[in-house]
Structure formats: structure tokens, C-alpha cells
Length: 125
Image 1 (cartoon, rainbow, N blue to C red):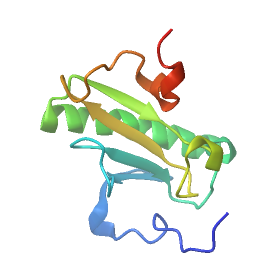
Image 2: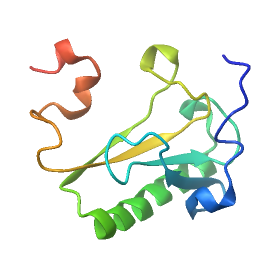
Image 3: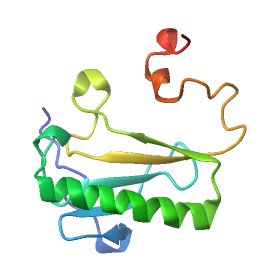
């Protein structure tokens, strides 16, 4: 997919905010909102669908812990959870990762449709 070194495989330990045996969580380097976090498996694997059950379990545990942390720290009004799998879906770093994006009242003019907005012309239904 790419010959570039994986930026997630070379995280500095100081960047890690939460961790479990098979996964870690850290703040996104290009956040779409304050508190935007990424949760990744420690093992390099491009596709979420190829993760082991243990990796998925740890990712879900870290999602819960990250939500609690961000709720306490940022008091968002909601969250989006997203996973891009493959270039056609917008994946740009080919190390599986889950986005946890805090949402705030007024951060977009029309939040209705949420994740459906990845294809804007099909967001309204």
C-alpha cells in the first residue's frame, strides 16, 4: 500500500495516553475536534477485520476508557466513532485505527446524519 514507515509503529511512549496489553490510545496529530483520539492495536495490521479477538477486546476497552477521559476533560455533547478500512474508504495510514471524535454543540451547522456524512450527497434521507 505504501513504502513509507508506519507513523503508528514508531509512537513515542510519551504520546500514549491509555494502554492495554494489545492496544494503545493517543491524541490524533491532526484532530478534527479537541480531544480527538485514535485507538490502535500494538501489532501492525492494516485492516480492522484482520485483528485478533484479543486486539478487538482491548480496543473496545480503550474506547470506553477514552470516552470517560474525554467526557471528564472536554465535556463533549456527543461522540463519533469511525474506522476507515482501505483506500476507497479514506484510510491514509495503513495501520488499523479507530477514531473517537468528541462532538460539541455548534461544531458543524447540521450534524444530522452523523457518519452518513462521509458521502455528503447521500447524507440526507
